[in-house]
Length: 141
Image 1 (cartoon, helix red, strand yellow):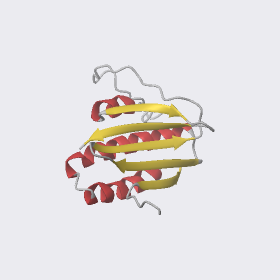
Image 2 (image 1 turned 30 degrees about the vertical axis):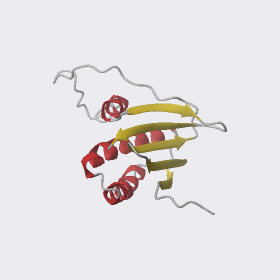
Image 3 (image 1 turned 60 degrees about the vertical axis):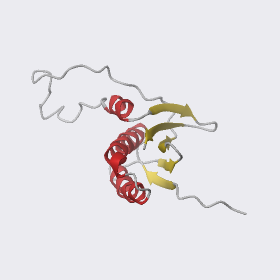
Image 4 (image 1 turned 30 degrees about the horizontal axis):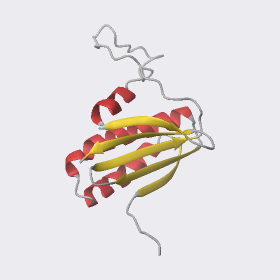
């Protein structure tokens, strides 16, 4: 006898479009589960994890998992890169600290993991037994 779950399992390509595709499917699943009060947090966390994985291992296979249990939802992203995520120290931003030159306009990354930590109940990274790693988060419903 097989067990049927309504977990979401996605195989994605590490590209700029991956997070947008996943968000569409995640929103449908979270709505189906009747957890609209955590939808925005789950979408932001998923986006951060998927974008980080796509940057760590561009144009390669990624895996995304979304499931639920009695306390809330869990989400995880796998990529084959052995590099572990690093967090930029959190500091107060000022207008003087913002860099708006054409050459470095979009290089201000590194703030995603603090957002994931702030929005999730728990989060972490688990090296995969064969290669790569799973970066995961849980959100209480």
